[in-house]
Length: 342
Image (cartoon, rainbow, N blue to C red; front, side):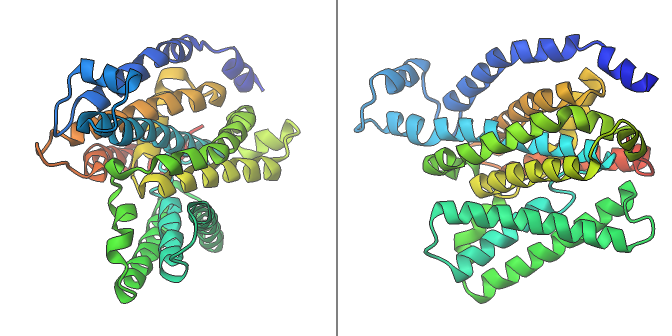
């Protein structure tokens, strides 16, 4: 009880400062994302495209129909994945938990592959539902297998189980794509090409995103207590099962729409929650919004960097996040792999 009191009374100055500074940081990131790429575009041209759009101007077309959706999409996806990872880590008390490591993203890609193979004429909204269904199925499978194994919910075993299930689902999806000759159509979701983001799809996922975010913020206080252990949570009168269902639904929604938008992007949900927790402490009422801000900035800046690593060609965004994420993942396994956080 004393520990819970210390969490609630702890300083949140860093979190507040981060959230106050976030609009300026997001705006600067959007400007960088729009200005720089294979073709440099002057700021005056960007302003003209926004204020006086000319459909016959190629630069205006690039800005409004490619770079702006790409900037907005990368910010949203980064925020969604980071918040999903934060919830997973708090709910499971597992420092290695994230949508990519636990197979949730792979479940979405698998479901989208099935959708492309058997229902090729399905609407974009239908594809989003398939992606959400795949995320939910992957969560159920991973937790089902973990419950059958001795000490299956330990951090390392959960990570191994999630990786194995995710790899299995990805392999089945790749096999289906090759057999039914739709590899070209679904390559987008395997390679996470942010430059091909569909603006209409971004608009479609907004209601789902709002639902997922509201659930995340609604359970944030409960996840803080749950991160101390189920015994503490139960002793304080919390409905643990209900909290886990709400938190899990938030993860499924946010991960599912992220994959539907841009494919499987790894490590954002693993890295960013740790940084947010380091900056703000262990109160998830601060961790979740701060993780969202940091995740948005992280992925958008990685996207900008991907344009210059092999200029003038673009490096896949998954390669950039993996360059940072793999060493971080190995560090976590070495330092915290045998225990969860509290």
